[in-house]
Structures are given as C-alpha cells and as structure tokens.
Length: 138
Image 1 (cartoon, rainbow, N blue to C red):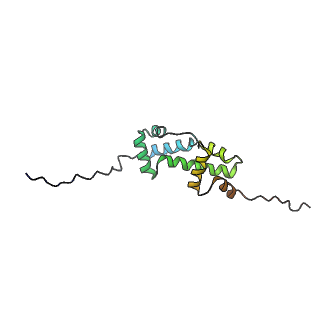
Image 2: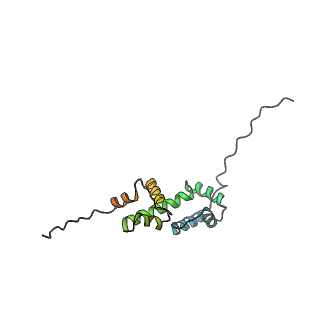
Image 3: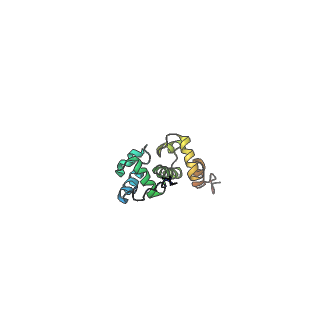
C-alpha cells in the first residue's frame, strides 16, 4: 500500500482549567506573600500554601495573575521600599535589606527597572523641600 503523507497532530494547548488555582487558595498565597515579602521565599514555600506542586503552582499563578509569583513578590518589595524612602531616614542599602534584597546593587537595579528612577532620586523627589532659611529671624 502507498504511504500516506500525514502530518502529526499539532500539540494541544493546555486547557485553562488544568492549571487553575481556586480563588481562596490564590488569596491565601497573596496574603502569605504580603506578610512575608521581606523573607527569602521559594517557589516551594508558595506552592505549599497553595497545596500545589511548585511547577503547577507557578503555571496556575501566572495564568490567574498574568505574571509569575516572583514578579508579584518584587512588586510588593518595591512598593514597600517606596514608602520607606518617603518616610524613613534609613540608608538606601538598609531599606533594600529591610524589604528582602540581599544586595544593595540588586535592590537598586530592580528599583530602577520598576520605578523608572534610582532609589536615591525617588527619595529626593518624594520628600518635600525644606527651607534652610529662617524667615522672620533677623
């Protein structure tokens, strides 16, 4: 018999339900990340909260949120750092450590990427200018 020219079927796209995460579990993970953002959280730690394997959790989180868990964690760290830069007199390096970055260089690079400016410039722009003049005292 002649050989038929058949192409293999294209790979199936994963079904949306296959990697879904229950809303209650997603909320629990987000609360956990918000409470522990300054700690060195692993994908395994987060997957435990979601009762998923790390691989399935990563896929489900990305599908539900539109970005990976690491990005959510970095966003939380940067938002908290912005508040500390506005309100605290701690050094930029100390603020980076407080929000969970292991090195000042990594903190500055991530801050620059997400905030569009350096932590020092952000602090300078976010704080009101204080006058060093003493008006009325002559």
